[in-house]
Length: 265
Image (cartoon, rainbow, N blue to C red; front, side):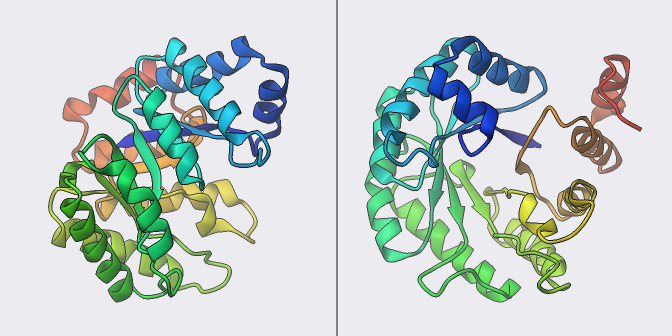
C-alpha cells in the first residue's frame, strides 16, 4: 500500500498555527513521524491560506525536504502553485490533482509534460462527480488516454474514483468498490487512490467506518490511500489486510509492527 501522509495541511489548526509562527521544528517533526510510520509521500497543502498560499507552500517544501528522504505530494487547487512547487522539489513528486474538466485539465497538463511527476487523476468531468461505476470507469479510461498522450506512464497515474458519502446513498460504498475493482482490472498498470473521509461524512463513528472501508477497498485492488499514518488503528487495519490478502510475505511486516508496539487490537 502506497501511503500518502495527509497531516501537513493548513486546514488543520496545529499546522496553520505552526506555519504562522514559522515553527520549523514542529513541522519537520510532523514530516519525520509520517515517514517513520510508513508514508511513501508527504502531502503538502496550504490551500486554506488564500492570500499567502504560494509563499507558504514553497517555504514548507524546502523545510520538509530537509527533514525526510521520501518525495512530496504537491497538493493545491492552483496550477500556478503546483508549477512553482515542481521547480522547487528535489525528487519526483506526486501532483494532486488533475480532472477531465476542460479548464482544470488544460491548466495542469503543461506542468506534467515530459513525465516529470506522478499525478492523481480525479475521475470527474465537466458534468461533475459520477454516481455510477460505469461513468467513473469511463472517466478513468479517458483520463489515462489523455495523460499517456502527455508522456506519462501508467505507473505514474493514480486514479481517484471520488468516494461519496454513505449518508446520502447507502449504495455509494458499493459503487466506489466496484469502480476500484473495474479500474484495476481494465487499466493494467495504474494505481488507485482515495481520501477516506468522504465515505463516513454525516455519520457517527467516522473513524470506524473509514477503517473498515479501507479494508474492503484493498480487497478490490486499492493500492494507495491518503491517510494519517500516525493513526494507529487505521494502520493496524491496513497491515492486517495486507497480511490476509497475501501482500505480506511470511507475515513479516505485521509481526514487526506488533513487536514495535504499532498494532492496536
